[in-house]
Image 1 (tube, rainbow, N blue to C red):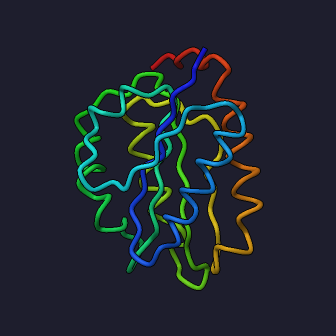
Image 2: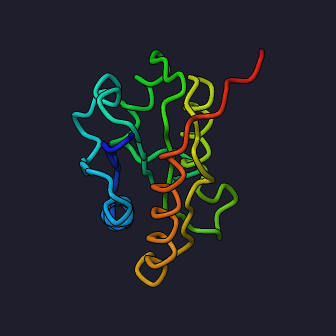
Length: 156
């Protein structure tokens, strides 16, 4: 049974870090042994040690990833993630045209590399703290869903 999860985040202002800790608490409440790591120094190869990988990034500028998570994102372009249970979260500001686009960018990379995106992403608009109960509920749903077997790969 799947038991080990890692939550990897890149944060500039602290919002993604706050969300990451809440995600970890939600997964722990569902029985997961959770590691929480800032993305600096995390390699794509390390992610294979976990049954569930959750990535978090805020969106900057005109839709860019948070700068600290960009090296991991680039490394993931060369990493097969066949069937690996994964999910993505991040804060953003809907007054920008590309709201939470970093989350979309990460999801697209993970999908292309063969990951199983267990559930829809968790996107928070604006101030994070009042929305943490929703983040916690998302993480608990994720923790429960990730215990299920991955779906069979689609024929290409």
